[in-house]
Image (tube, rainbow, N blue to C red; front, side, top):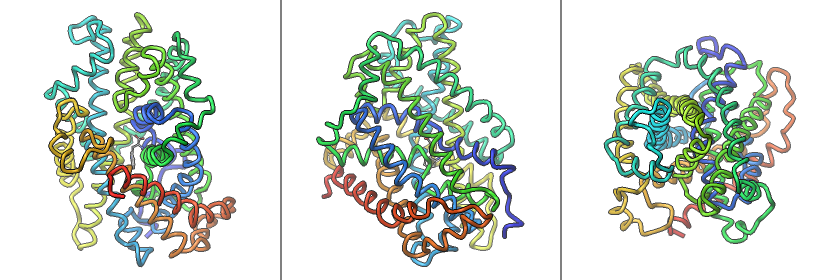
Length: 472
Ligand code: TRP
């Protein structure tokens, strides 16, 4: 089987693809707003603990299962497991739900790119001196415009998936990712030197665990969902990526590098957004929820003076590219699922047709999320009644987000840990890791996390979510 299957050109290429999938809107949009809404420092330490104890376990688990089986998520579980054969499809379904709002958020980035370009050339489609809150409010209630940008984002992503992951996008990411890093640093410098930014820094880094005492389960489930989402875990993308990884590569080290880079970028994004939110809007501003990124950064660019629009155009362009590299891996997951099932029935799937149909269906659900405008247009209200009112579900985006990163991804990860820890066995698992002579350094740690810490932690996470639903 191995001979037939493609491999990554080299380990660097693999890392860039894996990091390209991991670094996206989760880091730049999700992390700052969740940290803001969940007590700053308290959220940060819970997040880091989860990344070490559960993130590493699941990352290494997925990459290893993938390389061992040489198959994508669905095929991997079918090949290796007796009791968990069906776990793969959970991933395909979460990817599909995530895309419903990922494309909307990606569309907003395109809109902001255009807006800043308007400012740059003094055109009528610039910000016209409005503040971030008004600009975003106007976009959310303009359904036609929101839908247009969403579809535009989907068309770009779909075109790339249909063409196969061409060398172009990979080469592109090699420049785009480092460039994004540089721009983040520029934005951070402006953000932390604004008057009042120190309060934001204290909020992020000054030890304060009060929020944990108030609502531990709430912070835990929010940080856990964020971790899965940001690391592209719990829905099998890394299984697929691992399946293309040659036996001579070090799985442990690669897992570590991916997690480290992704977390680093998330914290940088926090530094770019949270101090600025405090400086420009006071403490309450950091609580803006999913709107935070789009409101605050626009205000930061405005505070930069005449160079602001230029930085704005570049910044949103790079965020859009990061979002596209992630979106591709999400669409791929669903496409691979259908290709695999066509193959297992003895046929062969037509990649272009499948990618096109999947994208059309995603566009339909994304249109709903875009038209809802983060709840501004009230499309969720009729459903709110049937589910009862529970904080989380005040818009379509939240609903899709909680279903995927809140429930299905932790569930998928929990099942994977049970599979490796109790059915497949740590010993056999270790054989794949040491196959090229690397030691399995973290074996004892991995075994402890995989068999006990992660399953128990994830059970708490799921319980926290059910409580949010009002089910328990
Ligand atoms: N990790 C990406 C982000 O932070 C989103 C993403 C891409 C993803 N592929 C994924 C999340 C697979 C879960 C699974 O924006």
